[in-house]
Image (cartoon, one colour):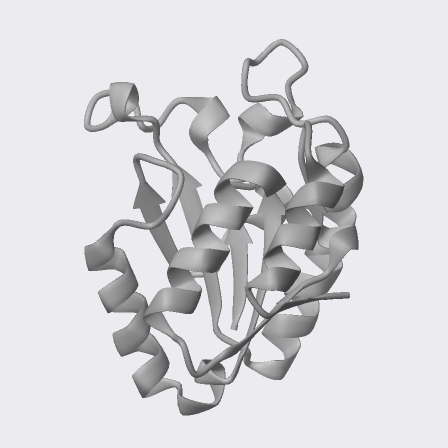
Length: 163
C-alpha cells in the first residue's frame, strides 16, 4: 500500500504558513511512485489535512486540495484528518480495507509532508493499526521544514525502514 500524506496545494505556496521547503521537488518523484502503484494495482491511500478551524466550513479552499498532478482516482482512498494523524475510526477503516486487499497488509510505504509532524504521526499510527506490516519511507519522497534527519533516525527506531 502507498500512503501519500498531506500533498496539498498549500505546501507549495511560499506565502502560506504551511509551506514546506523542498515540497515542489518531491512532487514529480511522488507522481512517479504513484504511477508505479497504479500500474501494479497497489492500494493507494491519501491523507488530506483539514485543520480543525476549517472543518465543515471551508474544506474546499484551493490550498486544502490535493495537488492536481497527484489527484486521486475514484478507486483510491482519501481520508480527511483534522489533526496530525489519522483518527482512530480512520485507522479501523484502513485496517478493514487492508483485510480486503490481503497483499497490502505486508508492505506499506509512506510518502509526503511534513516529515517531522504528519508523516511521522501517520506512519506510527498506521503501524499501530497494522503491526504485522513492514513499513518503508524513501527519504527522496518526503520533505519537511526542520528535524528531517533526526526524524528519519527516530523512525528507524520504530522498525520503519528508511531507503
